[in-house]
Length: 463
Image (cartoon, rainbow, N blue to C red; front, side, top):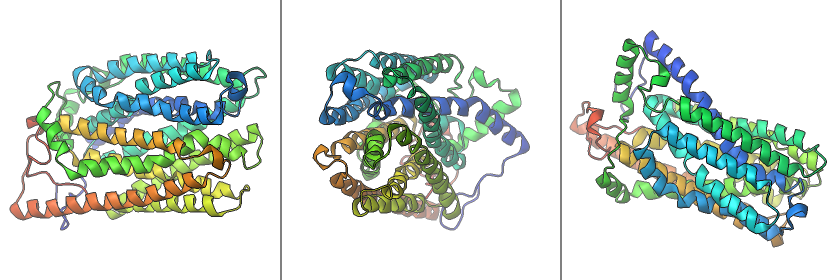
């Protein structure tokens, strides 16, 4: 690999054999990434659809209790993050993720049996506990199989999968909405059964390591895999390196990652839970409200694609973040200043910029954190920040301000500004370290040594 003047590494020119291997990886891995991300988003957002399909009447919950149901999911989600990082290192990823997919599918289906707030609350907490593993497991699978230069595209696909999957879940819900008796319950049953089936497939067939038998690699392909591992610097280890956890806690970057993830996902939490009630409050019927969710899925595709393209053009995670967060900030401002009519849909769609920002954060962690235990820790902290933001988001959508929610949109706008500052600071620190290391001279380090990016003085950060 060549070095550019700014310290960034030039893209690898792949052989025909390696390109063929990458196509195999895509065919064997990305379907599982799509399915897991799809049900993860569909199952947690089913509550938003339930709100306009009879949940209030059937269970007798209040608007405040509904807001709490939106947030309590993330209490379970955050409680399991650090135990999840430990368990991921002890058990095969495919069996671990597959088992939890089955368990959360059961909890989703059981939600249809709930008759009051307490029962709904219990199901939401269990769902949060089980879903907590999804993204960290997918992150490490992507980190293990793909080169650093490939990972921003794959992470964009991962985040897009939630958007593309939500299109399917919206269409499923639209069809189920025509059921005359408790359609929200049938939506939970269908999604629960689907999640269980995906869990079983994942348990047996997900290629969770670079040399997984599920990939059916030839001897030549195994040699290419070994060469690619030198680039992505991810070698799975079952032994927990506690000193790498301690190193994380001493790095200012870790806290910037947490703050970024938290502020970015304030909007995520608020919009996922309140998007349907908010749109219906603009004067649309329940069925039209469901259909008006489809453009939000298109915005997810646009933002994720834009973030990757800007990053590839500029070689800057900060630039990709600024474009998406800036557009999202504008959307939140419009939601505060425009009259409360259908015109607010413009702001509501623009506000989904958090998707592109999250792709940049995940790509930055994948490219710039080395050491297996350290990478797991960073992924866990990013997910905890994601969870805290999603937990707080619905709470700032104050019931007394319905249907305008000025406080919520103001908080989300401020969050987008903080996101831009965090990524700019992280990029500045990485560039400064690169200059020092290049001036000193660099070579290659064997990734089997499992050194962290701080220990490995040959490690060059992507900007």
